[in-house]
Image (tube, rainbow, N blue to C red):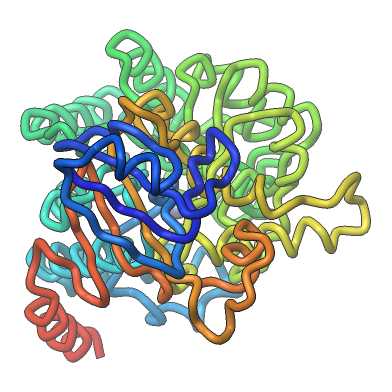
Length: 448
Ligand SMILES: [Zn+2]
């Protein structure tokens, strides 16, 4: 049994506790409260006090692609041309990098998450296995979504489906308590209607979590609603069995029954009020990726409307190629500033709800809110301990505000998943960081 204490504890499910403490045994929280009372009650437990710091549930990164971490800064020159960006990245991942390279880069991305106080990932992988193994190696929790290949041709739906499920089932055999598998039909413009239907049926019958990139860009909207643009021309040229839906991405997914599987929808930048109503009505959820959206110039998602609908919404960093860091506090900060600065805003977003979105919101987005990310007896001991004593943070008048506006990933001191330390004071604890850093230099030379 172990007691951790600090100047502040943020249970998320309740009010902040000054001079607070948490107690956990093995993977579960036993009690949360005032430090003095906890120490008096649990006299046998080991103790550690972090002083000028805050203990809160770990952050959830609801949308990432760990397997392309090696692309950090590599495709930035294509940021203004999303199609070229996607094609270059796919080519390099498939043709230049070996499986070992992709694996090491994915581990680096997972280590970066641990450094940033992230305890749980919703990770998408074309290869699946690399993100899956990376989370396991670093000691993180997560759901890894096996992604479809480029599969817009309805005529190939059955064989595309069989290949996808084979990969998924193989990885599912090695699931752990912490890391589970899901499925990701990539997007409404790269997956045929028939394949979408098959995946949705499978997901509903077997209670499999799914995630989809949806309503991300103007190009996607152009294809879905008008049947024009790069992909429309490509599909015509290749004579793919592809029918132009002539509706929004959300209406398209709804018409195929995909929303009945309550998918986690990443981005949702180009969504109407009617689309948000569909998300809410079906219990689908959203991964809000404000920095990735802004880096591509895709626009500002109606985040305030997601919160007020309400729909389950968490933050996602997206890949290191499109961000280029994993810092959920920074996502929360950008989300707040963008939303506050919109001329059409209805209200002002506050720091407390942003920290809730970065933690519990992410757990809701991944359907894990009953297990993690609020500090209550019986829940999993997934914690981040963050310093509040740096010059740029003091004085701390309001702990939520200090976290949202004056703190970043580099202030994290300790990250714990299921009661196990995975990061402390600058180093991941379950894996040799130096070895991975050397491998990254080799990968950089190869990509040059
Ligand atoms: Zn993505």
